[in-house]
Length: 196
Image (cartoon, rainbow, N blue to C red):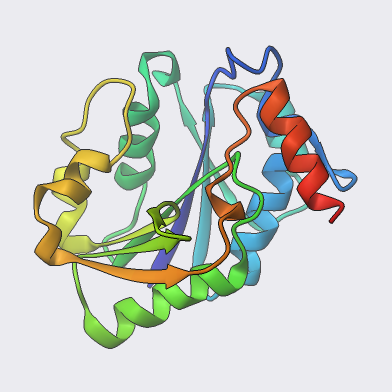
């Protein structure tokens, strides 16, 4: 069983408004990310939100996902990552971590990571977009304990960097999945790319 975990509890300070709810082709951004995850070969999709975030929950209301509230979201991204991992059942063999502000990640990219993990059973599978390592990243259950030790406002970068020999990289030519929507300027650039 492979679960997708979407981290959607960020405070969006640089954006000035909840980026999870920005319009993306007529849908809230978080809905687009969740729908992409659901279209991929994942067995379950979890969305980690800030505690009692009714607006994000409402944006996902018609999707078969599970919402995991994170009451410690204000302490940084690591708390959402830990909340997502802690919410997994014992039958989950791998988790794919997605960010809620990278709309150019496709189901095909997710499936390529899943296929590589199934073929190789490596601890970590990560994408490289136009020469730069990006997200989403797939973690085998053997890495979950390490993910639960991350603290502060950071993701799993340190876990990935700890031992490059256990990371299998998949290369893609497209650089658009690297774009995350953190600022109004980034949102404008992303919207231009969407219309191309």
